[in-house]
Length: 413
View (cartoon, one colour):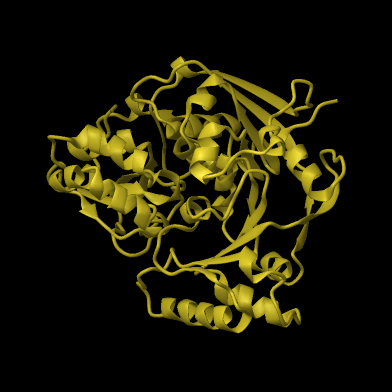
């Protein structure tokens, strides 16, 4: 019997064959903590009696959710984080370089086949380069910092095969939203999503990131793509035979197999206030909006900003509509300036902010109030996430979001 990608990653880590449902202890290759959780991780770490981090070079602390501080208590997180770094000799610190999930792959912290955990549910993002990555709580993180290990249950795998060529107005965000709508918010709970097919092979690493990022919205433990030459180029490595072998075998056992034809996809949105409440944009067309947000760890990359600029070139944001653009990292910000993307967005009337989580988590400007509607490219549209509980949040691709910004209402890009 063959193996799925997740089974191969865990097998390589523990040194023996594994099967779904089996509980094993893995050796952790890298961990990520962000600014919201560092006070709780630090407190729990010392409460457990640890006096040193198992490997300070394998721990990464990233300030992104609270940068710059928008509430008085935010600075406490920075102070405690800085004290923890100094006390335990951590070297991998990012204080305003961008969003944690962007930086973990962009800065080279994660490689194919790695086992990675982070104190954020969207840690599933790193599956875009073929790593097993998943979100955990601060108690688990404190334990890893002290021991370098964590027990897991080997997930079953749902195989998602996509073949064909995507329509011009469809992006990876539309694909993952469609999948979440089909699976439901709990349809992949503690499962691995394994993406395959020639459509997937043609995708950029950035597009794969958008999909692995949102796998958690269907409950998935992780989401995995087979490493290829695009992965190697992005990670600036030469793939080893073991990394190239991270592909689901033809005779692997899957708990479910889903097939999609790329030509059948259309632009979609997740409607208030659940990510699995997905409808075609055409069915929502005409609804007036107050704001558009393009950014986040889901869609704040260069190709996302360029897609939005392509739609907005020569146009202007509609009267009374605010367009907020937030790059996912400093590197992306610089690239978008250098290739002219930022100029197009600025000329269209966009408010361009520093790289951070920003409005995705309802921070650092842009929150809305009762009765207002926002079209956003991030990953969650829960009640109260971007202001009051009476704000309507529609999740969309960068192309759809940009088209809505110009029209002042929901339109098909």
